Image 1: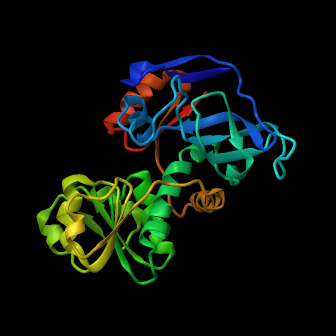
Image 2: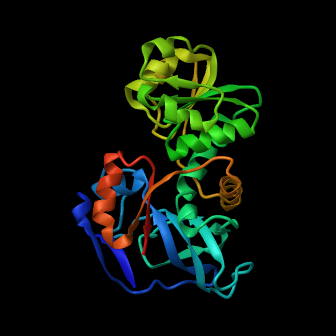
Length: 302
């Protein structure tokens, strides 16, 4: 089969599309024919070595976290899936024509979603939902500011917060305010504007996907005892304040992923796809994704 291998840390040129042996599956595992995957920031952070300290790779490595595909073969202990079933998962090693997944990580792809649409969902939807539900532990009636609200994680976080009966504010750049209106949140805030930040006060929570100097400027918008949920680690200086910081790494949750995919299928929210590219184009695809200028997910198809 064909797969993308990373032989050493570095730029996109270190990714090689080549022939490898088809992976072997165990009694509790499923061999999935990959129909689509997508690029996430963790992919190029792993490739470059930026995430090496907390997530070291055994090289050569096959990257990729999002899986959308069909059941090809399965171990004898696997129940509930038939050959040819459309499945999705948050897993590993998805930059390939086939990958092996533990059966308990798989979820069915809802009717109404294509393989490409499903491939854009696993990591961002799980991260966004866990940011709200596990890190912040949002309560009905609370107000949360979601930074980077037009990103996949931010879109999911805003959607999940509103489903829990919270008031969600979309935090975006001034140039993005008009586009952010499509999110149907309870308000849009330019978080690069001191004036608009100054009008925020007594927020219950911030769901942060941006970090850096931006989150530091937003400390003052939280009420005493408020919470910051972060996908980027604890912000510098937060410990000095009377606020709670919950940083986390997303954990696979197939049931929740399926529920969110059903929300997408019902058009309750969306994760935009900017481009669909061939897996063989991985070097160019990662260059585009890393620049962050494409305006949505890049989906890869073998």
